[in-house]
Image (cartoon, rainbow, N blue to C red; front, side, top):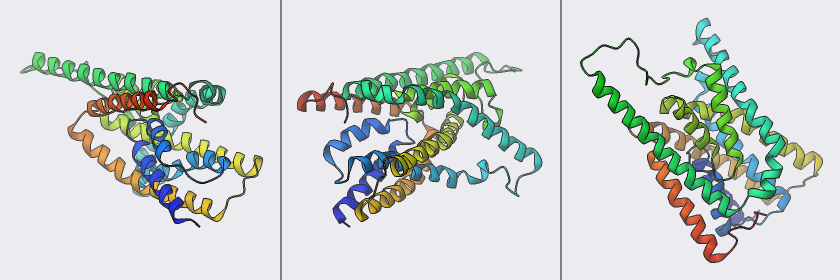
Length: 302
């Protein structure tokens, strides 16, 4: 078992754990990271590893939100258990569009749009979108506050969804439709769902949490399919080093994801997502500059 490959796996887990949950695109980071850190493994294993490493990130969500997601918790009354089951139903409904689009177009998109320039453009476009949406919401809320000062309103036209249980099925489905945008590399799955939820009037906290929960069936299902394909269809045989890379990558992804999720939820209590918008724009420019200088701006990723 090669120590240097295990250290590389730690770095991959670090990148996955951070970028999977922040709306900054794991693909955008991986496309740069891959230029500097290359695993000495078979292509079959690498294709499987880059998907299965997400299992660590998924487990972080399950651990952190186990009580909220568990409909059979003895600490919940019958009404709360029913609410949790309804939440899962909304999650599954929201996953339907992405599942359909993914099965139909995933391979085609990878064959035609997995280029540095597409990733960079997606990073920049959605970065601008985050900034615009947050500023519009801030201006609208400020205008409402000034207009409504000293007066009593029976209803607030700008009121945001404050709890996951209050999300309607149509709104959950609409957020799921936004998730389909993530099929374009550089968009970010969490970024597209959070942005869609904000546009629909959902609070930042609820938007982030619902995005986390949407990832569970999507990422778990995709990882399971990739494992089945690798070992049962392609008959992948892993070396001891590759098994070590897989274990280290998943474990680090889990630990870093726990920290990243906690930090994100703490950050958005006091701040907007606008900072992530600026970060995306900066990363997009960096991708364009790097590949324009060293070549491969329009080349398909291998």
